[in-house]
Length: 341
Image 1: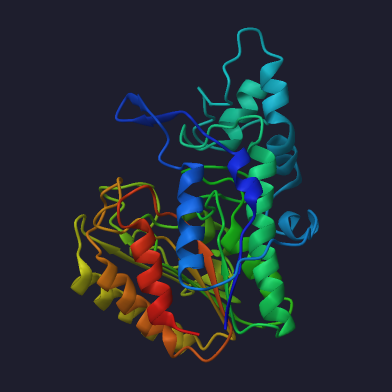
Image 2 (image 1 turned 45 degrees about the vertical axis):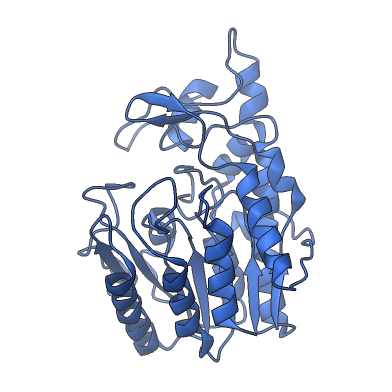
């Protein structure tokens, strides 16, 4: 039976600012997307429960202390500035490190926020903390043996978050936090990221390690966010060399080549023989997604579910992208229905 975890506190993070090709637009990462996904789950007859509070310890195993301090206090410190706007939005970045860690909240915003897609409001910290607790609860369910499959309905998403930096709607890396927790019981883990965007934060966190095999199928970053990471030649470094596998695909890719890439990814994961599989479940490769990176149909997501149906070891699904398009609920239903119990 598939377990589903979600937290209502996600709605406290309600970003307004989004910069697209120099134009200010409403953020695509809206609270409504999580409500739509939860309704879709309930329509399938699945129950949803809230997470326990697992504290900051498991999160601090992935994210740096100064970054967690920034996330907790940035909005209040920003509001103390004369003429401050309603959200923390960086306007300067250190460009290349090494550089000195700034005292000013304006400088720290630039240090810890990679782009303008992750504005922070009064409820952001509580919202992103709740998402991380959702992922941790799902991981604990698998580790305890209570469930063989668990779906962490996280919002906001997390796979663009580095150990000390937010970006691309993401603050805490829910997928990485859950995976780190699973490694306390399972010696080897694999992450399959099917979001339309490369999971650059997840890649970075595990890039020098061999106990986590990271695989991502995504739109080619030569032409699509996050641009600087996600290329095929990125294979890991040091102990992690050969344990990162990227499959970039052309913009507009539809079901058939996408599923062929998924098959390549699963074949490589099978060779790694992990004890647990974490799927970073982005639904934004959909043909109806407003970000328009790929053209995957509900039938394509169903085919993904069918491919994972036979996975015999523990399986954790962590919600990543998937925005307000007409097929958002249909895509999740198609995937979960095909995945089965």
